[in-house]
Each structure stands twice: as C-alpha cells, then as structure tokens.
Length: 314
Image (tube, rainbow, N blue to C red):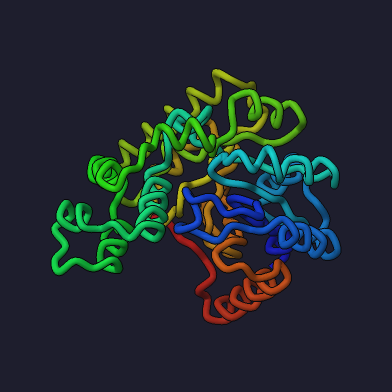
C-alpha cells in the first residue's frame, strides 16, 4: 500500500462567513479549522510540490514518503483572499481548479443559484409564487426546497425563473458579492508557483451529460486557460465526481488534451487509470483532518481485505 502514503486533500471554500451561494450546498471550512488541518498534515506528512505529483504519476503512483498535496475546486474568491496568503506564508504548493464560465464573475454556478433561492426562502418564507410555478400542492416550504434542491444542470431555465419569482437578481449578486476569482488573481496564483487547472467549463455533473458534451466542456475550458497562462502541467479535476466515466473519455484526456494528471473525489482508492488520482474531500463533514484521514485509511484497509478498494473503468 506504499502508493497510499501520498494523499490529496480537497477543499472548496475557506471562510468564517459562509456565503449564501454555497451554504446550502456544502460545509464551509472556518479559517481556524483549516489552520488546524494544516498543522496536522505538516506534522504527519511532507508537503509535496507539483513536481512531486508528476513524479508520483511517472512512478506508477507509488511513493516511499508520506506526502500531501492540497487542491481547491470552483475558483472562489476566498481562494485568493484567504487561502493564498496562508499557503504562501507556510511555503505550500497547491492546485486551484477553475471554471472559465465563472471567472471575473461572468456567471454563477447553477447549484449556487439554487443555494441562493433556498437562502431567500428561509429568510422571507415567501413560497406562494414558487409553489404555484413548481406545481407543488398543498403549499409546503419543505417540499418547495426539496424540489429546488433536485433541479439539474439541464433545468437552468427553471432555476432562473424560480429566482426571479422570489425576487433574486443573479447578475446583481455577481456584481455585488463577486464570488469568484478574477483573471488577474488567477494569473497571480500561477505566477507564484501554484497550479491552475480545469474544473470543466461550467461545472455540470458529467454522468448527466453525453460524452460529446463532456469533451466540449474540457476543450472549452482549456481553450480559455491556454489563452491566459502558459501551463507547465496540464491538469483537470472532475466536477462533483468521475462516477460512470468511460475509459474512452480518459483516453481523450491524455491523447487529445495531453493531460498530465486528473483528479477525482473518491477518497483513498487505487484507480486503474494511470494519470488519475483520487482526492479526499475535507468539507463533506466538518471533522478534523486527523479524523477524516484516519477514517479514510481505515476504510481503505477494510476494503483492501475484500479486494474492493480498486476502481476499474469500462
């Protein structure tokens, strides 16, 4: 199990004030919690460079040292304002995976629009128009929230109309709150040694779209990234999960996109794809890094005993 000495913790947003556009989607990691996580990681693992990650791939995903390499998905502005100064101060390298559709606050992730709608419902309780629009009878706040929560990437028109029904102006929110990093901030991260990678173009669930659409998501995202910075390492982190992704898509990533490394979110697992690495989500539950990582190792060993810790692709 030597390869599993190298771990890849994944975060989204570090802040003491969970913003409305994410607080109904996942846990936001408080700053002190994040600092405690880093203390644990630095006490028990060696911080890895991007070159260490690439060498790990070249060595068949085997490591003789306990390494960790951090990554942050979605390109939130807190990555620049909160995380970046902490990592610089501690001398840590990391990867930031961005969605070009959201850079410079041009658009808002469809799930973030859902979070804003839920937040507005919880604040003012006005669900009559929404209930009628969504055809939910009898009127029920819980049922309206449940329905809104299940809307998909393909339901964007419904999400937009639902927002208007409850008085939300998504463009105004983008202009006022500015949830995402700017192009200049992303360039600064890259210039200071941090890895910038693709997280798809606008963050759909890949298992809900066709393989052709998946490929277009990747091409569009790299067209954008290649136009703004010179990539030494070409990297991609799957939005949500790599579940049900066919081998043909991984072949496309390496052969056409010339990808050096890709990342999933399945925790500590052995993945048969040569350049694909599974990460440990750190914000599913707001538990300490020590507890999450020990649990991951315990689960890995348990699955190993039954030969169930291997991810095979078809």
